[in-house]
Amino acid sequence: MRDYSLQHKKAWEYNAYDFWVATSGTPAERAAKDKENPLKMLKWHARYFDSFEGVKVANICGSCGKKAVPLALLGAEVTVFDISEDNKRYALETAEAAGTHINYEVCDVLEIDTAKYGEYFDIVFMEGGILHYFHDINEFMSKMYALLRKGGKIICSDFHPFTKIVDSLGLEQPTMSYFSTDIFDGEMAHARFFDEEERKKVPKCKYRKYTVSEIINAIIGAGFTLQRFDEQPSWNNADLPGEFAAIGIK
Image (tube, rainbow, N blue to C red; front, side, top):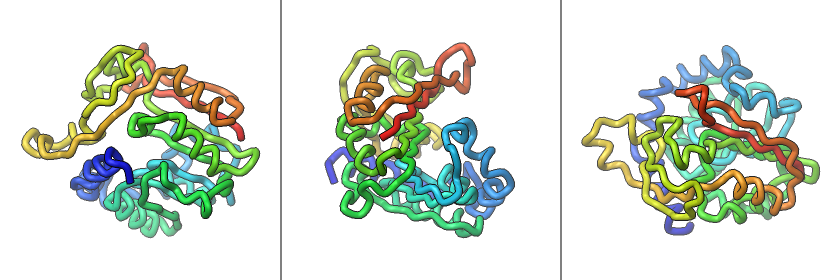
């Protein structure tokens, strides 16, 4: 595992299970919400799935299972790839409480075993801001391409690159030149929810943020046919971009 991935692992295993319990409820409480309306739990990402039953989904950096469990409840065969054992524990306990099953591989996403998972999945799905954890987006997209069967789909949803220059999502991360290629130290996603003393103890991550063109060109360069690119408003200000979804076909 590369050095910056080890650093991310430390950050994402820092009190992560307790954090999910505090913010999302116990696994049983979270499972009850997932079971009540799994389609609603997928939010706007649901529109990109043509079907769910029997569909093999790779949920990249799937964290605490917030999308994996609803997908499984809808009939998908879901495998989460994530770097955190704490995330795995919460996700598997939630799936069990919901009466469903997900697979969960704790690993560096760039080191997913393609002998086992190469050309296995119908859909590769990611959301919630993960691209900035990977320092070579071309390498990342090539790995995603390798995981998909021919005709498979990538659903790449992430924070909008506009957030490089304006903190439109209120993530309390530093802004910079839109065209910056710098790798920088920054807080992991939910560090801002800890009290100030605890917040100082949370290990930092090493981020690399991308432009729209870098993301689109990496998807095309990996071999995908780009099908569509959608933008979503910020959670905090509907006048500003907050998220995007890029859809590609292998």
